[in-house]
Each structure stands twice: as C-alpha cells, then as structure tokens.
Image (tube, rainbow, N blue to C red):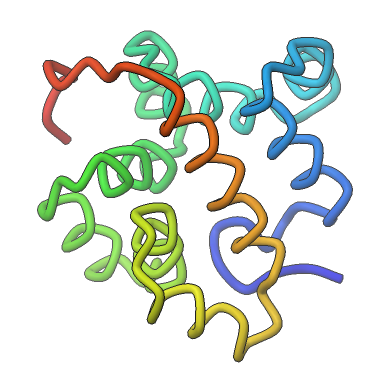
Length: 138
C-alpha cells in the first residue's frame, strides 16, 4: 500500500521505520540513511531541529520536505508553498502534526492512517522536547 502525497514513493514499512526515528531509534535512522532513504533520515533530523539536514533537503531536491518541516513549525508561508506546488496532503499532514482534529479526520477518511501514525510519533517527540524557534525561515 502506498500513499498519495510526496510520501507515495515509500512502502509502509519504510514509513513505519521513519516514524520510529522519533522515538530515538538511531539504528533505524542510520538504516534509512545507508539504504536508499537519506531524504527520510534528513527529514527526521530536520524535524528534530537540525539545520544542516534542512539545508541538505533543499540542496538535494527535497524542497517539499524542507517546506513540510517549516509547516510543522507553523510557518504559514511554508503551507502556502506546499499548497501552491500541489502538496495538499502534506499541508494536511502538517496540520495533523499540529494536532488539528479535522486534519486527522481528513487523513482517516482517505485511508491515510500511516500519516496519522507519523503525526502521533512527531507529536510524541515534540511534546518531550524544547524547540529552537530561531530556525531559518522557509
């Protein structure tokens, strides 16, 4: 089963591994990096506040993932960019990461429970961290 978004190229098991990186599983983080999914490894690092990972995403053709990180950080210009460039599902996903119930409902209605799972993992991580609100603007 695959998704319809920028994440549609990934098998569910890869997305599950990505989700586990937010629970501190550095072995899976490294596995993603070394086994053909460096963009997911970078996205995980980026969401966890790594600006080098953010810049890597931009330089390596994953602008949508850099924008997703910024949208998760509640930067409206990133959500606008995602929508303008056809990444509507990522806008909804970012909203789910920001605990908007209507976003989770929208994902559920479209059988995108994996994105709800990922939003839950990201929220679990975020609720237990301090944030650097000085990250670069998207």
